[in-house]
Length: 496
Image (cartoon, one colour):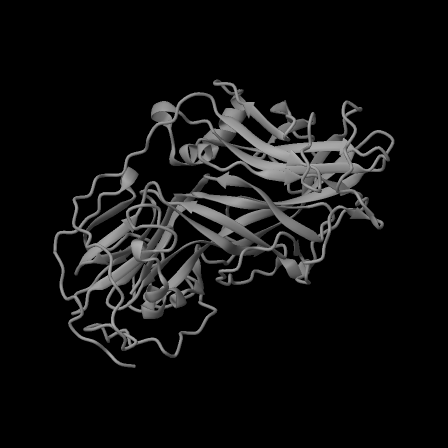
């Protein structure tokens, strides 16, 4: 391994960034407060499952940084403008949720009644069944689209759900209908309503209003017997970083689901079958089959060369999960998103880790496997399923938080050469940059829950952030965004 000294040496000492909506904060280095601050893995923070790459430089080798011997890539702009504090733009008006429903083959589902129920309605863990409360209904248009505007003043119960969830009312939008032969055709979307407005606007409420619209296909549900997760799927497993898009369908037992077709029942393809409109309504109920805690990756931070990294996830769950749904309990897909903004009661994270260090950070989250039982006139009862996050929950004897997968492969000269030049920037000596308001990170493989891989997005804020602090090495410290400019919405800051 060769080295190069004096490459684009010291930079301006006064650094900061002008970023839209206070995207990043920057200043002189100082530690971040956190629970997990050990410099090496420990029981308090969990342990890493990935060994250190043998090619990693020594942590003490920080005078000049490693290079591959070729001419250095072009660097980005030096961060020299004055910072502006992050501000949250208030939202106004009643919240509207919307989506699109289709047949299995993608054709629009027109004229169908969509029923909205609250996700946060308590589900007893003892297996007791509840009939979901109807918040409202909507009818799909000719193109399958639907929308529902909540009242400006919510009923007290719904307002409590929203208050406990950071100003966000999470809703399940469901369709239940019968094919001409009586087969149940069903589909569910999960949507968030940002109901905190004006001076009470929260980061979660603003983010909910910016969520993209989902398109959900209905599928036949013929499962007459409840499927209970195998005990093997209750085992907590470490996350694995992946650049591969999540499969449309997953098998809970780990077998391939590439050939699975949810519309084929007993050899008959129901993808083009239209449900009967205006028939007697099917009656849904639901209850918890199992609940379990799984450690879930909510962020990561990177520190190459002479830098140190910090990540903090403070006081509230500030993430939006992809919800897994299934019509048979064996094959699952991610359908819609649900925000969890409820209090954790803890500030967790890490500070001053590095150099040549990068890991994901995990917190324990309670998940429920929920059975959705449906009774239709003249037909047998059927079951479909969803996997939902509930709350931050430390298992008995478990860590308050822990390190997840090693992600150092995202840093270094090779990754820097492959990065988008417009996403690059230069961080000066003893300066730090922090991702805060207006930015978020997406983790496609956040946890494996009941055998199903779950995704999530974490919204950065003043209490949920990634931070990188440069040292005083001879070479400049280069950084770049994973999905955008440092002064935009980079997602994650990578380091070289």
